Amino acid sequence: MPIRIELDSAIFRWQAKHNERMTMARLSELTGISQPTLYRIKSGEATNINLEKLNLICKVLECDLSDIMWKQETNTLSPDVVDQYENQRQQNN
Image 1: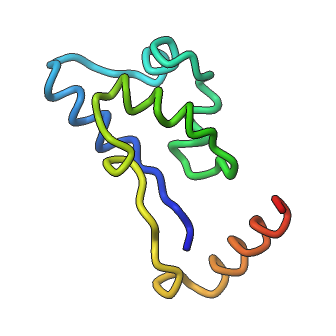
Image 2: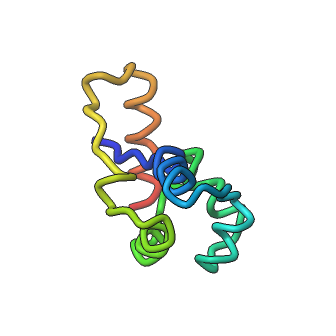
């Protein structure tokens, strides 16, 4: 099962709570994670994500890992997506 990371909802909740805007530049500044890395995480392009980085993101956005991560059932994915995921997984091993 692929794991999905969704930062937008956590960012929106943080913005609503603090009544200010959280940009990727600001999130990068507060977490020490580069903007390109944050964009890869946000877009789902990151394949090997350090849990320490996710913990930093959660700390800044005042959320839990379960607020930004979930498993997606592979049987709901198209066969092409499943093949792509399996190929990526094999390349990483």
